[in-house]
Image (cartoon, rainbow over all chains, first blue to last red):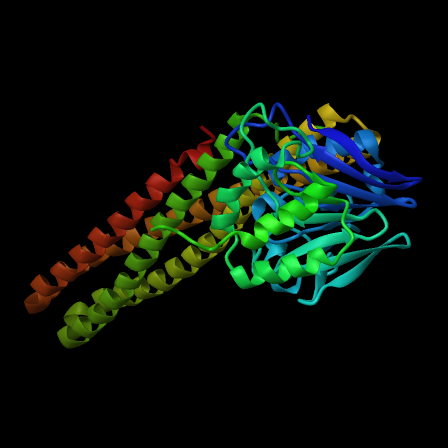
Amino acid sequence: MKTTKTIFQDGNHKWVAIVRDPQKPNFLIDTNEYLVTHGGQGLLLDPGGAEIFPAVFSALSSEFDPSALAGVFASHQDPDICSSLALWLEFNPQMRCYVSWLWGSFIPHFGGTAETFVTIPDEGADISLDGLILRAVPAHYLHSSGNFNLYDKIAKVLFSGDVGAALLPPGEDGLFVENFDAHIRHAEGFHKRWMGSNEAKRRWCERVAQMDVDMLCPQHGAIYQGADVQRFINWFDELQVGIVAA
Amino acid sequence: MTTALTSTSATGSKAGVDLLRIVRINEEIKSVVGVAFKINIMALNAIFLAKRAGTAARGFGVLSNELRVFSQDLRDCMASLTGLIHGCVNEVSLVLQDIRHTRLLREAVELAPTPQISRVLAAREIENDRHSARLASLRKQLKRALEDAFQMVELGGVLAKSAKIEAAYGQSFAIPLAQVSGEFDGVVEEIRSSLESLRRSAFFVGN
């Protein structure tokens, strides 16, 4: 079973990271799911693949009433992002799935009806969660061509999807980045290969540098907090991406 | 409530095997449809031959007409079998999907035994039962349709054998008529053998 860790709380406004399942088979990439709650509602960010649904569901249930989930936010279309969608919808068919317009007719292959999907235009959109406004921030081509991060300006948390992701070796799976220089080695190969556009990367860095971010929360690996957020932006800005030797 | 599906891998593999069996049945039916079309052409040629042979081949002409009707009936029958097969493929595919969802929901119930997720699992199991019942019904219909097809082919066999006898009365046309009726008989035997193997398919006998 995955564990939950509250990374931000102000009354009933919470960010909960759902992470690290010791029982997960190694052939499945490890993923972080995040639950944002506000008032009586919850939004699950990148709910994960079908195979890890039991672990995510049970961890989430320990923290929050899953029937109060208003929806899921899918940063992009990959199977590790939202192939569990059909199972979440089986639990609550009223749930909405927020996703880039680009994938609005692709993700329904995982499940859902025409009413399930709320598509986000390229420039982004606000998503209201019981009065809390969350901003879908464009991160196109990083890595998916229709890709969004989710920013909570009250909590100063940016869910960054695959940006900032790291493939951590066994034994180095802390929730927060503790030694940036050591950690970033595990992120470098991932970013060089998965991120396809230097121009898109530059735009993202410029955009995020202007935002007030205390925590940058990727879908794989560890969370950057405090000064490590700016360190990451600087590092990413310098990195040449979209390069394959072959 | 009886649960038709369990989360065991054995159930999943049985559904997978069922799907493979249905695909094979479908391939066999496709080959029978091809052969049935061949009979239609053969019957048409036989009718022309009987016309040329005149009164000596009147009986043969009547049988050729019957064989042509038989070919059309057989194709209709195969079309209905194909429809049933597609229904079975669809249901077995749903059962395969059900098995995966049920397994994952059961794991979720074990890890977080809340009333809500237990209700979702119960609803899933009712849906599983419905798919399994529908598959069982389609399987029965398919078996019945196959039996009907087999009876029809028995009649086709009788027609082909009668045509062989009639060919002997064809006087100067006896040899070409015998050749045509022999081909009829061969083709009908080919269909009979295909249907025999379909009747023995483990999909119907439940092995």
